Image (tube, rainbow, N blue to C red; front, side):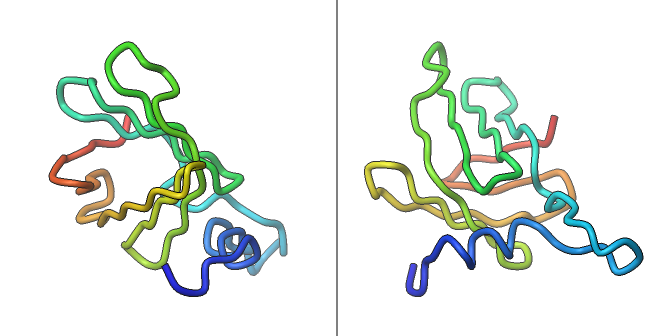
Length: 101
């Protein structure tokens, strides 16, 4: 992920309302789950994520960055992954389909 930086991460996760000039959450913030609920991604408004797998509630944690419909993940061990929001409530990530809860 060339150009990864805290400033870029923050600016892509929030946008400013033209009417109020206040920051509003990125539209993809929230909980995303696989159909069987085995994999759960919580995209937090501060640019962090928590991934749960089965009974492991914090299997992976790290930062994420969104550019249009693309998401890049970088976990705290420096492992990277990505995904694509293919519909308002559908995320394709690493061969999985996650649905917004």
